[in-house]
Image 1 (cartoon, rainbow, N blue to C red):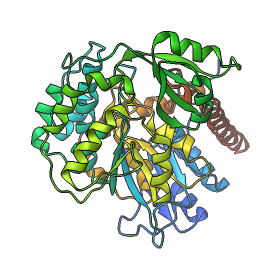
Image 2: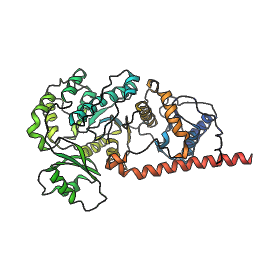
Image 3: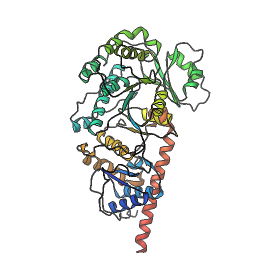
Image 4: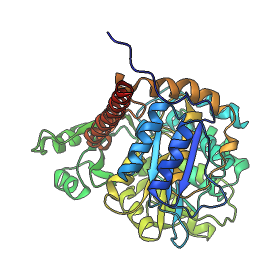
Length: 462
């Protein structure tokens, strides 16, 4: 087998994140060519108004070639092969747009504790709970939310507003400062494993809109809609028998449906007999004034300033459906353009599904993988391309970690390595995007192969 042709460009040995901005695609392509030749020029942080922006993680020769080809084609790019490019950032002079932090609720999968993030930023880490109980999963999501929220603020990425999905609203209240930070450890302990009793009812995910899900449960006792997540995902809560009767009404075998591995009755009337102990924990958390609004997926509006009204809403939230789809659309209507998922989960997919065709940007601070610093670098790169100004210098130790892991994957070229691999097996909505991700992967490999072929031909002619 013939040895692959050597790259005509030197191997990149500079910073982990390359950022370039220009007034036109042609100018940006020239800057990329200069970088590839070894003349390194980064974006001018004092000029955020330049509309053509590209960010690359660990810019190997292959990645630089891909980036220049995208720019010359004037094709926007949002993350595959660790490249982000746009000529129309959502945040730019003369264009308003707000940043929302979104905190996920319970996950059906165990997630890493992100020790590298805690160590790099000097933030409190935690020992994950592997009991699989609702309390254990709540412990994990609360600590993950606090850790990533702290890391984002070290990167000078801050929200204009915060919201959450289910128990993620508790993380949102701490993030905004509405709940006193000093109360976190006691709250997490009281909400942790085996802290309270819950009804023995199941949750089931169905890949259809809430309007269709209502038809599935019409006339079926002991089952309700607990979560309206997106146009293509609804969650039912009820007895096993009731859920299976609803499943039996799904005519199309291609419609995803699955029973989740935890049981609680949250966001349904079935929790009402068990409500008092959980409500007492919520009422005990001291409240503070804050300038950062917290939005409720119960009312699809801001949490009230009045302490008594806020506490009543916290209790109501426990037995009311999560209207996340409506909340995302309302936030967009109110001017939110950047949605940052602060934790492990599927909120990014729900936002994309809900706002399909509307101007917005979604980024995740964690994809549930152990290389947390690399994920934060990806987030910062994506947001910089859209007009934000993260503090990249605050990523301690990220250069070495990225040049080792990401660089090797980029050099693999068409070997099948996919740093943007989908989590489609974990969530029905993400499964809907799997075909799109495969198409992007194929396009990326074709672009790289074309560039390699052209350079090989050029050397033969010479």
